[in-house]
Image 1 (cartoon, rainbow, N blue to C red):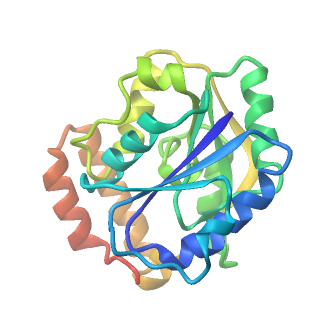
Image 2: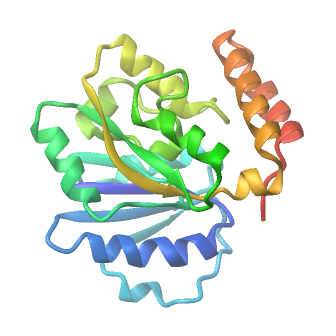
Image 3: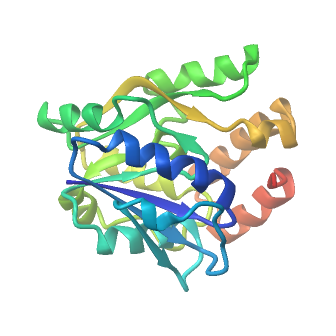
Length: 232
């Protein structure tokens, strides 16, 4: 079974779009979808009772790393896939994951494209097709054997911005075999539209540099929130 874990906070609109797609793509596969909500008051425009594979868990522990860890703790699948609420999977999403694991990889990521056509965004997306400095970001949808995820110590709860990259660094140190699947996810470009391409890229470069220099996570979060405004 594959357990898809979605950390969410104020993402009702995106979840209403994503969850039915996951339900449709999961046909013929053993799949469960766990939405780890950081807000207990979220409302949905469609009746989620129609989605048989979806389980909602309301979290008292807010923060993406904590929400993903708590989702993994209740997951029944032997494979975990951590998907952002504003990222849409490709048609062969579950087939690709199972093929990668059955081929001997313990983990993997997907390439992606943005939902807005732009020359500069295409440049950004092209880097997700191969290993590089930004490999391992959350938009690439980490999938991993649950046993390996547990052995590596899960996400670090104290990481409030760079939890994906911190975990990927431990993956590489442990020499975990992983594969980048070139079958594009569709990622929202709302952060770039709300800020600007140049501002987001320069901010990401600064944040990554500070992270690699072991800048304290909470200070990194405050800097992130000053540099990049959260879109509605």
